[in-house]
Image (cartoon, rainbow, N blue to C red; front, top):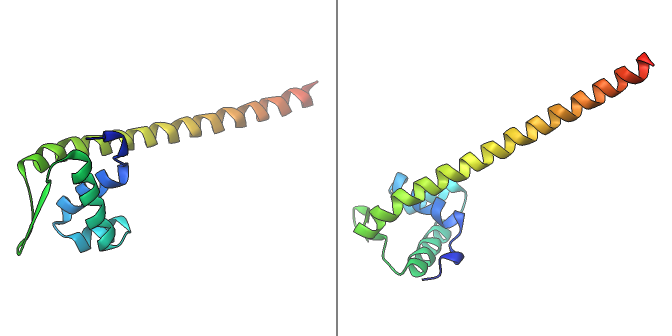
Length: 112
């Protein structure tokens, strides 16, 4: 098991697959082909060394390992979203500080 090869896209597709219950709908939701979802899941299962999803006539169902991994996958995506939000807030703050510096710099030059 080499966890360094697991990507966020594989985690995202697992969550999308479970949330939609369908390879085609998961593909549509995350903007990839149905084949990409299938191959991504297969790679994830290979990397983890377990079967996560069982395919049947009535759709998909999670294995015990899949249920365990899903909780962690959702947490990874929540944390990634928190990172994105923190970065966006930091970028906004940096832009605000830069704008204030420019404004005060102009004001000081005019006042001199």
